[in-house]
Length: 148
Image 1 (cartoon, rainbow, N blue to C red):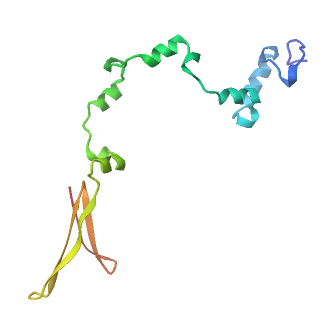
Image 2 (image 1 turned 180 degrees about the vertical axis):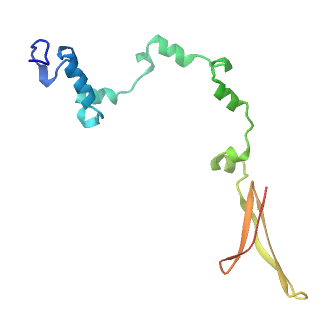
Image 3 (image 1 turned 45 degrees about the horizontal axis):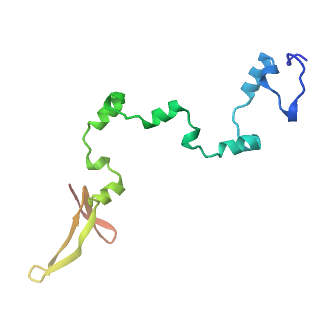
């Protein structure tokens, strides 16, 4: 047998990799690109789904979990981000909503008609950051503007 270094009994259809030649191990490693859940035995699946508790962790991991992180532990990219200014444009919509700076209409549009000039003034009020508006008549733009 060219690929087996020596003949061993194979328990339950599995082969220990140590009995395979280097050439066969290399070939096997090259042929396995993706491992899916259905390829794993039940013992491995049950281990993957197991809950890990603190008492199962070695002292080195526990020490790392409980340590205090100081500025000296942080990379320069993190430090520069910590020291940068936060503008409203960098905030998520959820944060903007919590800060009450998302655009909203505070006064619904209303018109004041002047019979002397036969014209109307239409007004609406809004609040928030980076407001913009567009008046439409029959689907066509009449006026656009924005305000910060």
